[in-house]
Image 1 (cartoon, rainbow, N blue to C red):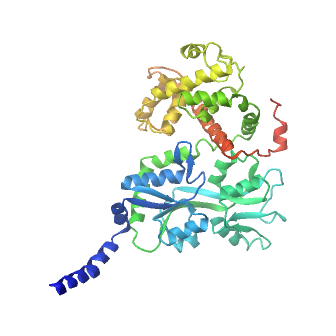
Image 2: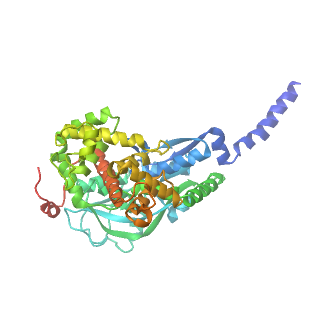
Image 3: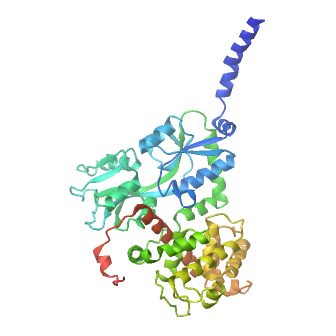
Length: 466
C-alpha cells in the first residue's frame, strides 16, 4: 500500500507538475491574477500625477490588465539597463517603457505592434551656439542614457564622424539629462521627439539642433524565450484600441495640449509665477480647499482669465482675476469682482458648480476638461456639442471627441439644430488646452523649483511687468 502511494506521488510529480509549469504565459497570468510590467519614470511613460498614476504607457498597460481581468504590478528599476534585464530574464511579462524597435534589441526581445513613431533629436541650450551636425560640437560634452537606442545611434554614426565622443550615463534617465543640459552641466543630449515635446514647456531654454536618422517605432517588448500567448493577446489588444479610437484618445491625452509650444507665452507665464502668483497663492489654496479642488488647476484658470491681474477688465465687462461676469458674480455672492480674494472665491465656487453639472459617467481627466469648457462657454453649449459628437458617431464622454464638435457651434448648419444656438466654439477648446499647459508647468515648477535661464533675445521683446 505504501509502495503504491509512493509510486503515485512520483508519477504525479513527473507527469502533473510539468503540465502546471508548461501552461501558456497568458493562462498563468490570468490564474495568478497579476500582470507584471517593467517601466520607467518619465512624462511619456509612467509618473505619479496629481490624481494618481499617469503617463501614456501606464494608461495602456492599465487598460490591458483590466481587459485581462488582472491586477497591474509596475516594476521601476534603478537603471535603463536594469529594465532590459528584467524583461530578458522573465522577471516581468512586458516592458512598456517607450522602447524603440532596433535590430540589436530584436535579437534578444520580441516586440509587439508599434503604437507611436518618434525621431531622435540632438538637444542643446539656447545660451550656446547651435551645432549644425554631429561633427560640429567641438569639445562639448554629450551624454546619453546607457544601453539606450541613442547609444546605438551614436555608435552607428561614428562611421561618418570618427571624432565623435560621448558619455553613456548609467545612472540617469533621458529627462534628467535634459535637465543637465538646461542647467548647463552638460552641453548636449539626445532625446526622442515625444520626450522633448513634453519637457520643453518646463525647460524653456532647450532647443533641438537637428534630427538624427529616420523615425523609429515604439512598442512593448516581451521575453523572446517561451511561448508567445501574451504577445498574441497584446496584438489583439492594439487592434481593438486602434479600431475603437481609444489609442488616439490616449495619445491626445498625453500630447494634445503640449504640441503647440508657445515660447514667449511660456516666458511670460514663468515670469508671472515668480512676480505675481506669490501674492495670491494662499487665496487659491484656501478657495480650492473649501471647494475640494486642486489649487494649481484653479490658479491655471485664473492665469488664463487675467494673467493674475486683479484689475483686469474685458471689453465685454467681465473683470477681476477670475474674470467673472456681473451675473455670475451675483449668483456666487461676489459684491466686488476687483477684490482678489472675492474673485478667486467666486471663481472657485462657480467652477465647482460647473463640475457638479458634468455627467458623472464621464471619467477623469475628461470630466475636468469638460467642466473647464463649460466654465468658458456655458453648460448648455457644452451639452449641445456632446449631442453633436454622439450624432457623428463619436464618444460624447471623451474630450478629444467633444473638442472636435465644439467649433461646429459657430456654423449655422449645426447650431440651428441645437437647443442653445450659436457659440464661438473654438474658444473653449483653446481655453481648455491653455489651462492644461499652464497647470502642467505650474505643477512642474512647484515640484522642481527651477528657475530656467531664458534666451536673452526673447526676453528683450517682453514688456517689463511687475
